[in-house]
Length: 127
Image 1 (cartoon, rainbow, N blue to C red):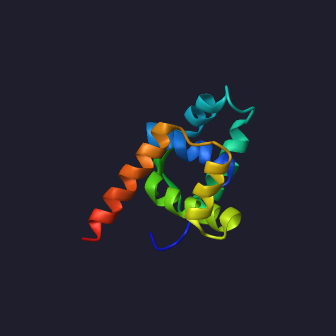
Image 2 (image 1 turned 120 degrees about the vertical axis):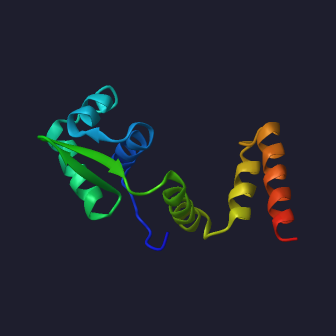
């Protein structure tokens, strides 16, 4: 993905919902998020317009309803968000992040095993 798309926490709620259930109408989105948010239809419309401007979503007009779908994948946004997070908190260093988690006893044995597996796989890709 060439252009980095930054999403607000509110936009994340909508895009996550769309990844699981697209396409969706404004009312379907509003109703699906009603238990987590107190958003009105107008709030959802405003957020969707912002997301359209970012090229994160698009819609197809079917009758009187707009049916929204995501234009970006979870993987595309995750890479961008992870890089931004690492830069803000750890000056871009994965090592600093892992070291911080170790110092806080935030990694379980399963987490450590998973990290070993990921690193072994990454190392083998270079061969």
